[in-house]
Image (cartoon, rainbow, N blue to C red):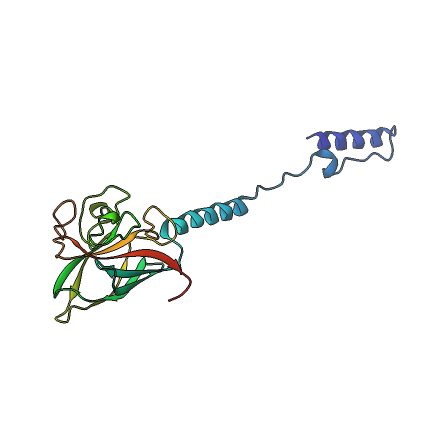
Length: 213
């Protein structure tokens, strides 16, 4: 508006002959242009931050851990390998020396495997205080460490491979690195509280991070 009024005055002055060389201010002299806010850049930063938080909750993809399982006499009876994937923790291994049939298999809350009874491992790993359940139950209705049962064949050997979507390796509240892995003498019924009536502890192994298998 100011520029328009000055232009009109200049035209009037030229007509009256009282002013020559009248000029109007450039846009830069009127007011500076407004810089657009970096909305896209801020959005990218927020998305990256959310991804980092999500990744931490899901564990460290590619991280590996190993549990060497021993019996009450301290003899090695198997190994269990853990790998963090995008879908959960891949669990695979072989354990021997047990009676045929299903036997409870859990992560316990304390990283101590003191024979002969392994009671040093404490109760089931249950950081969010959920009831005992089975591996197929909703995460709100199972302990994080509830892996269910291993099926031992007629030779007393169990070979297994599965992915658990609840536990994690390396980060998150359900991180099992440093916890104990327990094989029980009896079958876990997956419902009785607080541990599924799985009986005593036949084997124990400390879950430790490794660089490779």
